[in-house]
View 1 (spheres, rainbow, N blue to C red):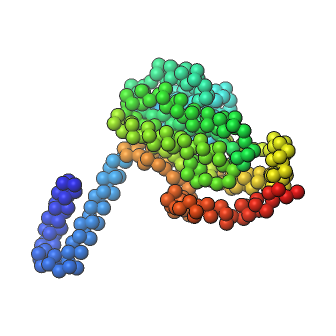
View 2 (spheres, rainbow, N blue to C red):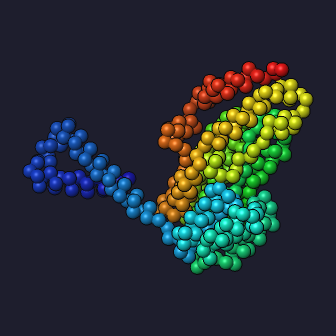
View 3 (cartoon, rainbow, N blue to C red):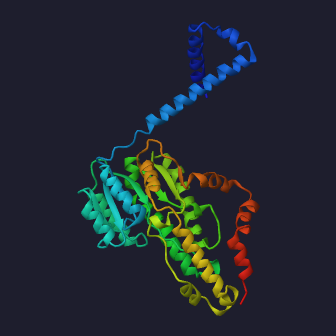
Length: 360
């Protein structure tokens, strides 16, 4: 508080001198209420300008040369594009791929610099993570491991009763426990460099809706883990950021494609009577069309990831939706539950679903 007071005092002195230069009596001006408002407003504007300029200075960016970054899930999508982008910036990239001999991994190997290292990394397997740490630690550049980007993930949709416990477990094993497993293994290396931990979450971590229960569960858990880690790591100089993409289905390979028949045949007789075939087909078509109507350009997400890795003061959260949707998603977590639920109760899809349940 003393620093803030000193800053305002200094600004007041500067503004007073400026007013005297142009022939205005500062004491006379501030003796009037409107005069004090004018001086206060000028001080506030001046302080805001200083803050904006200092923000620009402190976000000049981290230089990639001599620093390494581990990225999980680089076979396709965000991880693949980020790996190429960081390679171009001079980082040493360790690209974790589920299929190191697959097309995505081989494209990275073929079209990148010698700083690109392809790793076999299934985040659900302890042995893969352990082996990846051994390889990374043995091949670190002079400035060490700067960051880990926990990007590997899967997605699916389903009514709660269409899933089994194994379906929920499989989702969490990749999206939640895969990130935890990788973080625990590599945190000592990132802590040594006072670097960054980045977690790719989703708007569904806080935006609850029909058919996304398993995915939302895994991403909400991931954010809880990352939030706690951020508080712990602050004492070590490590910064933790969460990436929250909206609908980028066409820009990634995360969308699982299924037919209505596949879903229907998985249901037992009781649930087939409750969720009739027409609704299953309608829900499947609706979900697929909604996902495919999403953003085809991943650059918004990649730019946010790069900022989280290179800005002097990265954001704690990067909400990545259209400008039109931004206000809604910023407000959504703070709205009363009755209001957020009403968003779905009033939707055409919800009402169609309600009318079709138990129907023949």
